[in-house]
Image (tube, rainbow, N blue to C red):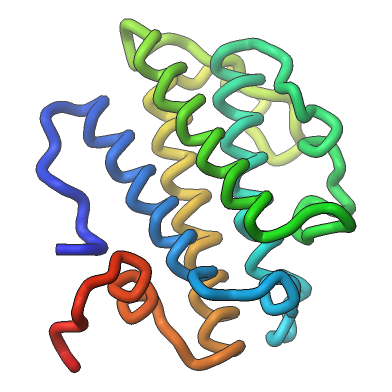
Length: 184
């Protein structure tokens, strides 16, 4: 059934499958939108759908490339642009954000596939919201955190999309996948 994770083979497969499912849900919320609609902020929040996709992609890239793989991401300037992190700025379109998200998903899959043990330590990045007495997390923790982050922003996206045109997740998912809606 669309919207449900397929049967998983093991823990690694399960973590990646659930992350992929949350990414799909976020993609569904922007299905069929124009760039103008993707930039609208119809709720009291300043969040927009295109900005949420961009933020989710750049956050995942930061965690997976910079923190887990310990490499400098090629778009570090975008990652560190906190002021514009939740919006599409000039030259950025919804198609661009979705292509970035696809690229990031492939990177994540490759990085995780190359890690022999999900218990591999991952340094806790310096930030005021992270505990000071925990020097390392694990790759497993990072993947769970990415699922959590993506799901949180997917919830924001659901509310924004419904505020734009009344459409909701399952309707959008079925439409995006080209499936007949079982409740219609």
